[in-house]
Length: 118
Ligand code: HEC
Image 1: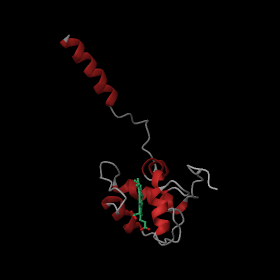
Image 2: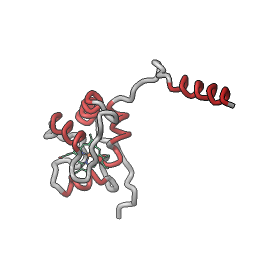
Image 3: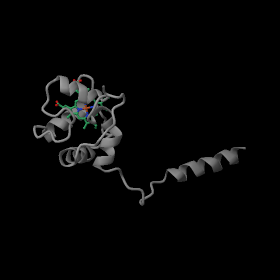
Image 4: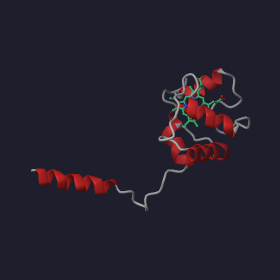
């Protein structure tokens, strides 16, 4: 029995070995994973809705000419009122910069509203 456990543990451990062919997620993918749920355009996104209430020029983060990289880094690390902070184990500094570059350069994603707008 012990041997069986040892063998299966070995299997699990070797499955954890980092595979160099697996690519790290880029800025667009990390944005989609970590930010899109709250910051994509349209209803149903709490970040977009609250930033609209706060009177930001563009409520989703895309195309915000006034959005400074240092400011975005600080918000992501410390959070802001309703927004949770992200630890370095969740997003590295380099990954935050990649998200920033994505937000600054990409077209805003087209999202379907969660509820039909009448
Ligand atoms: C759980 C929802 C949520 C997630 C996930 C989230 N945010 Fe936010 N974010 C918010 C809310 C809500 C605000 C507005 C602050 C407030 O009024 O509570 C905000 C504000 C911001 C602001 C400040 C904008 C301004 O005009 O002052 C930045 C920058 C920002 N978020 C970037 C990000 C990035 C980058 C990510 C992904 C790494 C992210 N957020 C993930 C909810 C979220």
